[in-house]
Length: 237
Image (cartoon, rainbow, N blue to C red):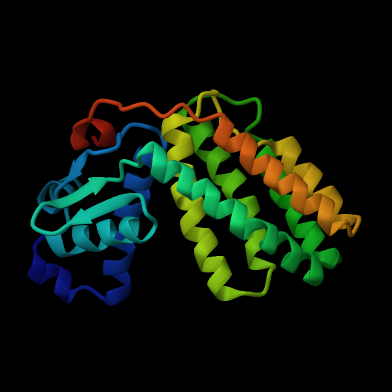
């Protein structure tokens, strides 16, 4: 695959290839197969996925928008390596934003939205007793999706966008530095938040959310880990 061939592809096909790269790299980062600081060169990514550097660059830019990859001018792309202070800032930001998400979502909550949240928690519960990297990735994603679903119900597109970035950054930190075998974004705590919302008790829901965020951060053990080779981490055939 070369750049000329990429140009001849429909825009949707090029985007699909970039999304495939984004998803594979994202999973490798969340699974701890790609550690912070790992360099992601466009040429190597392109070769591994049989696409041009243009498509590889698009996939890396998607990860950059999520805060999972850091792009440095004249140096290239690297898996984000959040410092302890940056991790604290992520959760400090969540403490500022998510109480407002909870209160805004409560104002718009109805039976259909409650049903959606319950279905999300059912999805999350499927991974509680499973082990292995696939289950871990799915559990972290499902936990984050609960927070994103609440944000989508707040009726504020800008707020929702902020939450998407914060949850992506939180997922990276949790996957890399969480001390428990699974995400600390506890299923029972999500259920308690939903119960308070369903009861119309916004103050309790807000307090439970703050306690929940404290619990996530308390589980972190921020350590520097060795950098892994991209090819080995992706384990492509």
